[in-house]
Image (cartoon, rainbow, N blue to C red; front, top):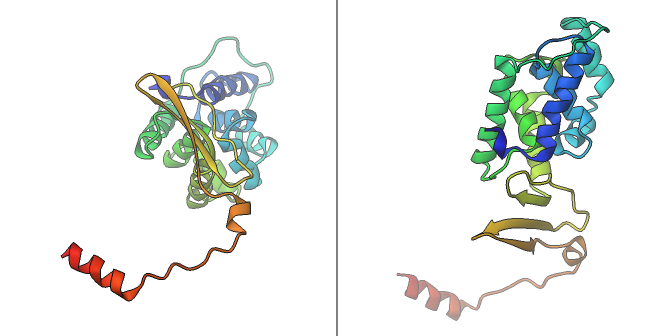
Length: 208
């Protein structure tokens, strides 16, 4: 499953482990994954979370308050909790459902929201980020910019021009295409297309 995750998403799990150890926890829960998303500065998720005013300090404060913490920390890496594994599984499913052959940090955030019984979902709700709003913002972010459709690919980057660049591997070759209309092109008035009555009737007859 994790082979489909982007490098950014994999770093999230590593950062989650570091967060857990720093708090003295011998496991990786959804709350640690949420802290990992905030720590991965290159991902879609951190942009969405910052836009929703979800800050690392506020989440860490919630973790210590609800779960507890130990400044001493531990040495070994802890296992993923069932909720954390479930969230990553949902993230992978979200990627497939959206037609992506990868799962990035945006998908991981959707996974945390989808694992509604997890601590991360509870924290996000307490901090004023409702699940539907998070999903809406993630979907908006995933719909723009650069999307790397290969395993271990990069995260989408917002393109200020208003176009979207897609890179797709076809028969072993990487194809890059730019689609969409730039902001400058949108500003150019377009004359309305009026189909003559005769042509419209001829087309209707052919379609019958």
